[in-house]
Image (cartoon, rainbow over all chains, first blue to last red; front, side, top):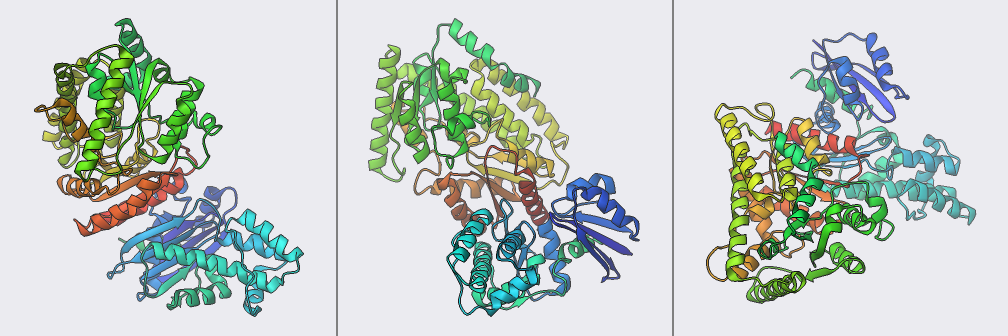
Length: 247
Length: 378
């Protein structure tokens, strides 16, 4: 039995197929302005018996795919357990939102907090700042890691932080130190969100921003707890949706 | 429900009927206002708490943007003269409940006669009781002066009976939802509450309410529910919500949750306790209103105990606490309530902070979906 999960995010669409309890297929692409049509095109070439949709576009495709939907919170809880059962907290930093989840001793959802009303501390924040500083995302992370100290960034709002960074650079601040300051800001905000859900124990770190090595290292330091990142941190929601299709 | 739907739409006809009888309106906002005294004076109390998004733009010209939407909306209506009830109110009874309302009344006094009662910070002792008693007496004196009447104990007792009857009927209606499935949807319960605010003919309202109760009893006996069988049972609490600002309640029900109780200020909170018909009517009125478990009171342990009790009686699977952006008292109290419910009954709580706009419907739906998925698993 092949169960598919489709995660329609604000920036990327992810599809995962689970067969006999194993992840056998995964695909990821940019959402575009027409997620419904894109979803239909992508799914046309994939074989599956059941499908579940998640992500912010789930209700959009629900009627057309005639499939059940689950919230991305539930999808992330289920998906994380596929990769690691020793984590008791989940942090997902995506393109435009961040979520923190705490699990109970059974691995079930206990509490959750979302930041999805502004792009502060999300992938978008990092993208904008990298561009302002003249880095690609990969260079950005490496630059931050190379700095000995951080230039403190006070604004979390992407728009205001951009002004602050431009101001710092024009006053002669070191690019790498500003880069580190930005990474620290995003980690501090995420740690705050994790605190709100009374999280403890090992953290499952997912979402596109988990690909950023500097954020991972800083997060571990800030929380003083182990952080686990799956090989592909963007697949978690789709895997969780696919797993829920079996029940 | 058809009568209640149309009652909400026919409000201007209601105003006309009252004026034709030579009666006056006295406007109020919070449920601390001693409505019995207005009725005893032969006037009609009318609630002015606004639930509409449109007047907010006007309100923001005078009040800070980061103010609670309810106050911005209410003030927007008041200052532009776009609310017929405000315009037709002879004077306003306000209270020093929250920071926002307190200062709004100061601005309002410039263009509308207001009587602002000072609510004590808590209901915990004799001092607070005495303080509020004297404010209720002052309220009586102001009503008498402004309307040119004298209130006798008999007038007041009759008003007490009138409102107690309504409270009792509302409780009877709400209690029908103790059965599973609940026969009345949260949206419909909200409509009844809203219709009550704008139906000045109490006899008609009570009659229609009794008829509704009868038909719901029949539904309940047949096991018929407003939502699907097995729908998660949710109690809604928090800030005042009404028709116009019912977004969260609507989303919960669209997502498949059954809203079995609405404890909010504009909801059942005001109907829970009767005014004691014995003894001094003024003291009895004072006692009932001081017991209002609003978050502006500190501490507000009454609300914590009430919700734990309701969660048990209504076999709630979860509680959704609605917070308007800018309402600091309900916002902080949310955390206190969450901890209390976890300890007393292990009832999960979801806080939704929002305002009157519709831009965050998707985000709210995600949280509600996740919450309902979580409680369904338990």
